Image 1 (tube, rainbow, N blue to C red):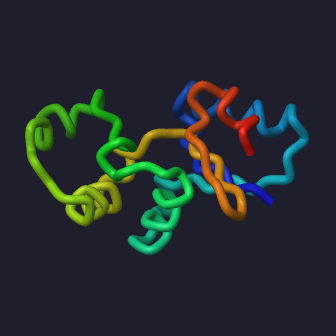
Image 2: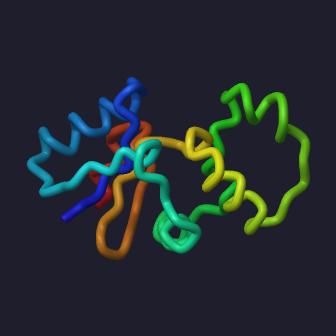
Length: 112
């Protein structure tokens, strides 16, 4: 069973979900803007992605450009920002039992 962290308003996220469906992957959808991740969940997800928090920030978001750009924060500070502002998290993310991938481009999902 896979979990796709999804924002239905995002074209790339919709494409990732469509790819999961077309591949016949058993999955559940988590709309993380409606059902935000806890600190523990986000930390686990980042470990499965093999990414540092700052690597998963959507730098094109207005909040990032106005409030966060140029700040030098540690991993825990970035995690706190992501929890408080889930819109900043790159999407879609597809998570398996031991590994997760960023589904942009959708071909990354095939690594699972």
